[in-house]
Image (cartoon, rainbow, N blue to C red; front, side, top):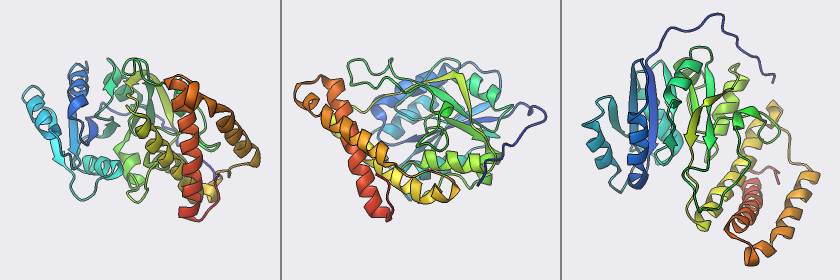
Length: 299
């Protein structure tokens, strides 16, 4: 299937902007994100839809406390499932805006984030913020090569906007049916690719910055990257017919070679080196598990 770029002949009118934030057990970080949202400078109309997705901590109480200072902050309950895709869809269904800006409860939006995305969405239907990883991760095992995922192909196919970085028009969101709630993980990649295949090209917005928070423990890093590996196999099964290439023998050899040569770092490396080896091992294992689960071959 070819990607047909939809072109816009004139800018949109100024829109009502809906910021949609799924929340799950985020009481420890939620205040920092809400303070950052409260500090946004924007001369248009906007709302924040916080979607509590079965939190068992004080997340809802934190949101209610901030509602006293932020009358445009709404609290919605998402109770049928416990997934990010479902929570974001619930938020979109109740949102009043013409455009949707998605963010996560454990990250922090930088000054100017809202205005930059709103301005970009006057010209484009599908845009992505830029990830910054230094501010919230001092002393943690870091990865240095994030950049802007919207500017390069993912899995040698199409770029994508991570769920915490994504913004799009209601028209585009509804045309593709929102997030696929059957997607086990990688729902942000899946909707990004469907949007592009339906004619909505992805545009990066360098001035819209999100301070991203890494996972805190090696166990959490392992779990996250196993899920990523499974998602790669799932995405290949879904999009191979659209042109997504399979994993190559050369690529597999390179991955396993880097994993084997990196194993000594598990014993003698620093935390960043240990985390990197763990990520590679988890990704390889996740791809194997995903290949078995989805009855495809993506290693």
